[in-house]
Image (tube, rainbow, N blue to C red; front, side):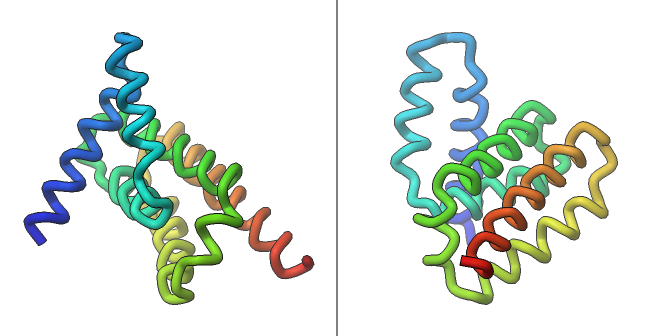
Length: 126
């Protein structure tokens, strides 16, 4: 459990670096982020979004990155997840929407849920 907490802490640092005005720091953070496996990205991003004690900018960045991931790499990432993890992601998003108190953050989370739904409708109809 301590290792997972340390990894999540590293991920918060990475989110902060992705927001850095320093091009070198940001570019290195982008490269690091790209090398994280998809399932781990989803887990870390959801945890960052859920963590209301994290910096608002980091939570918003996590929400944007998760929506982008579901938008651009859905077929590579989501179908490879075990069905119980897929169900947990859907439940988690709905719970976070209900619990979120910041309207701008709630809108970003709704955008994630809409992107997931859009992709899932495409899968079931395809």
